[in-house]
Image (tube, rainbow, N blue to C red; front, side):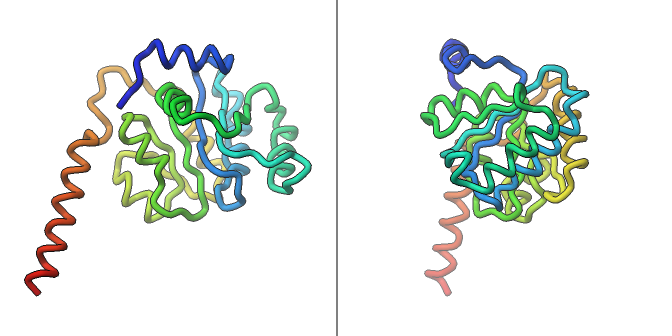
Length: 198
C-alpha cells in the first residue's frame, strides 16, 4: 500500500532529498549492472534537468570493492557526484517512500531471479524501467519500459522519456495487489487440482 504523503515527505526531509529522482534498490554485485545505469544517467544528464539517481542497498567500502571503485570512476567521468547518491541499507519504510516518490524504479540486472523490487513497484503503481530479461517480462508484461542491459544509450533514452512523461490521470499501471494475489492463488489451486486428478 502507498504511504501517506506526510510520511513520504518526512523521509525526504530526513534524507535531504527532493524529487525528481530515479531509484535503484539492489545489492552491489556485478550482475546488478549499476555501472550501465550510471553510464546511461551520465549520457542523459543534460536532458534530465535537476533529476537525481538514488541507489539503496548494503554498500561495501569504496576501497574494499573493485565494483564500487568502478562505479565511482563512472561518476567521475560524467561529473555526477552531485547527482548520484549512495544511500546504503535503509529501513524498508524509507525504501517504500523513496520508491513511491521516484520517477521510475530502474532494474538494470544482467540476470535475475524473481525480483521483489519489481513486485514492490507494482504494488505501489510505480513505473519500472527494466533490462529485457524473460523473468522481467514475466513479472511486468507490457507495463514496463525495457532495454538491452548492455546498451547504455538505449537506457539513457528511456530515462529521458520517463522524466518527460506526464502520469496525470492515467489508469493504474498494474492490477491491484489483491487481484494479483487472487490470480496466483487460483493458478496454484488449479495446479494442485491437476496433480490430484492425474
